[in-house]
Length: 568
Image 1 (cartoon, rainbow, N blue to C red):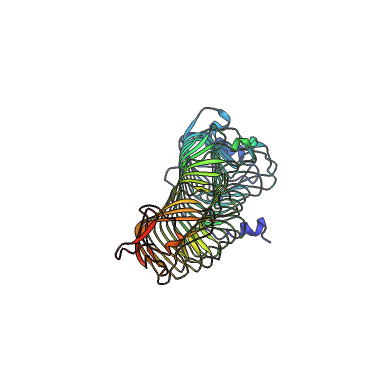
Image 2 (image 1 turned 90 degrees about the vertical axis):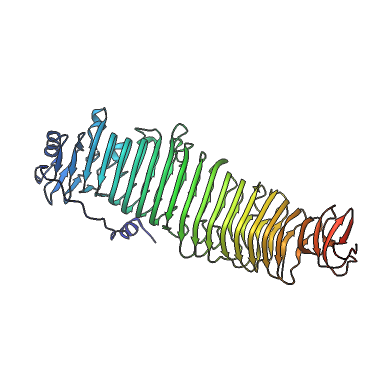
């Protein structure tokens, strides 16, 4: 069994680059007293306000109240350890504005090991270890933070132009936690382990910690390599009056306890539910999750705008969790989602992309995807909700059994893709279809397939819907199927050219009750299975018909061979 202790210990070997040497002419803090150093350290900080202050080399300080850094001050603690004693019930390190009001500016803390001992306690925001409020121009670099209990290691709120870099955690709760308002925050070089989210954006926080709130804008989170018992990066919108806007997350590695990236709502509190997340970019993610605990990206927000996911890499089996899941906790519309440059070694029971019944997506782009292997019955993209405009391009899929590029699953009776375009796709498999919409209640009115090749996959499309299919430059290598399988409630129309079939292909099959009209001359099919529509065309494969085999066109209710003139 994986315990908190063993999980956090697993990241113990992660290290940071060394701290830069301190500048000359700094003011030194007094050496440790062997007792409570709080008063002496704070007196020295006040006396050197606006300057550069350095801790005594290899000092081990003990405090029982917050150390307070004034405006304009640089505190260099490389090689020092500061421990907040049990029972102190407060923060370890803060800035003047936290208790004194007003705003601070240009504060830097460099280096040091900051320890919240077991049993410090406190209530609300006092449970955080390093707490920063109302600061413009904050820099934290090269810190190690260790906590045995309580809440956030580094808590930011009402800040602007903040840089958090080269931080190592071994903490009980969140690593870096941002509350609004916060503008232009950059977080990078995060290592170690966290008992909750490694980096979290919550423009408004749970009731107990809701001391400041507002929009969180223009945030960059990069180079995260940690172990987390929750998410490695969480981006929430907060409550309906707040938002997380223009966020970039890149370079995420390590191990997550549930989802690597969590986007949207935390429904445990109304303050973290319903806020908007928009203009979010997530790229270069290679992190994994504990088996059966989550996927790479989980989007559950009820007010999400546009999200772009790029450069996702998965090694080994995925199990039963989708790589990307869009599952709002209540019916909601996502303006746009892009999933591109994805490389997956193996898809098992779960799809790469899952769109739940509660989700509507305005524009969905899936591109640059390589799947090296699948289990039978899986899909690259499974849509149980609604997609208004779907574009799939540049996909290579090697499948086993009945696998699909796009599946509207039979159990999702209200699934709909209102317009779909598939381009530059290659699928190699032993069953299934490129696109499947198997329920009579599914909606797939327009589907375009260009520059696509299937090998061993019986059908280009498997439809029980009313669908107009346009094809161009499509090759179907295999003898078991063809362009379309039309089920008993399906009604398909095929248009286009550039169709190529393997020898012995049936071209199409139509179940009793279904219908198929062809305006594609190269569709090789038994035309007795087609609906006779004036101007429709196909290549007849049934030699028993009086029109003969070859290219035919329907005039009125008669099929006529285009070269011999024979009719049927």
